[in-house]
Image (cartoon, rainbow, N blue to C red; front, side, top):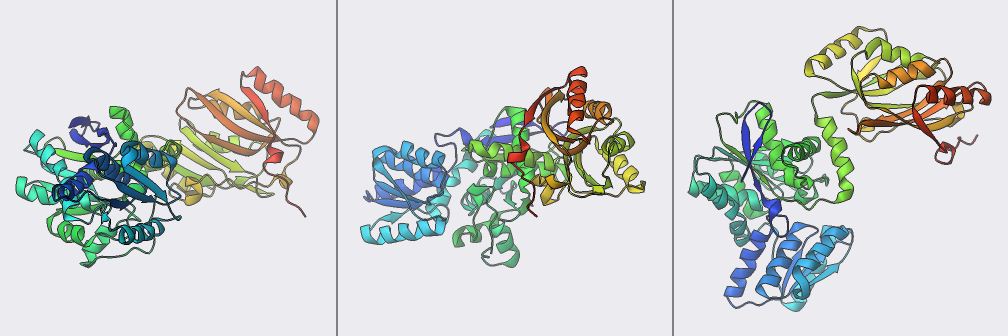
Length: 480
């Protein structure tokens, strides 16, 4: 296990299952299940359905034990995970892509099972698979017998039930906390209702734990042996991934950081104190799809208590935006700016700010008493997805520039103050990337095309680098 600091609130341990050969704990249950079959003389074929880490676990076990396995995957499975299953399985494993969903792939797997008298290796709802996953608890206990809390993620419940049951034997005083993500918390809902619940819809951002209904065996064990089940948001999971990167230079897949997100939430809510209580979070997987990284970064920002977003209503005229910045944002670090001209007389810019909790409280109090309409939109879906309304037919002789500027508080205000007598801003898209230089896509409109040269000269005079963007191809004027 590794020790990880949590600012000034003490330290916690992380159990890193992302360091295994398949970068996940899933090999444990698969290997134990197949090995028991081989010990009894069953050489397969074995079959599994998976769009993720279970496939790799089965593939690794089949190759190591020299048996054959067929793995059914939806056609939508990322290439990364398809290639990983083939790599770990080698000649012992066949990967079959069927359908667009797990259910479609699973139906094909069941047909194959009957036709070939194959043995199914379930992903979680199997006592031998659960026993294999429980070895995580053995290793934690071996390294630290005086643990107080162990946080584990819940998908189908194989890992959670295995760890919880194992600790009932190893040390009943240890509290095993199950953590689920809101929108896929089928185990939490089932335990609350005292029966297995099938979710109507499953949030798939944390795809490794996206299970609509827990297993009958895992449900029975979890309801009796877990100390508690708590829920977190996708944004809190992303913030946990960011914390892992900042502390350990580790990037997990989204579902891999669910347990850590639950532990951090428990610390922030003062449910546990890592300065006096020993805590471990199981990091369950590191099979991160590279294309998800920007989304992880974006969602992490929304979980930070030091970042808030506000939507203002101001007059649509020259100087209105700089007036807004001068009135409310002196000394405030703007990390996001979303604005598009969408009405004749009114503008509705959205600004994200980063500040201390005290500054944010003061800022909210100031704007609530001001005569400019403003609302907080931190949790609004249009803010999360950066929906910026824009009507090009309302602009006059507009040009669009990609502008580079020093990424420091006040730089945006200085630029806008210099150019406000020359032009009106009709579009502004800026999001702080954490680099030493900021980059914004800005639309400028003018009374006359000849006025455009004044703006370019001014930007060069204040040493703002820029390049032209042909925005007309992206957002054509509405037809009438």
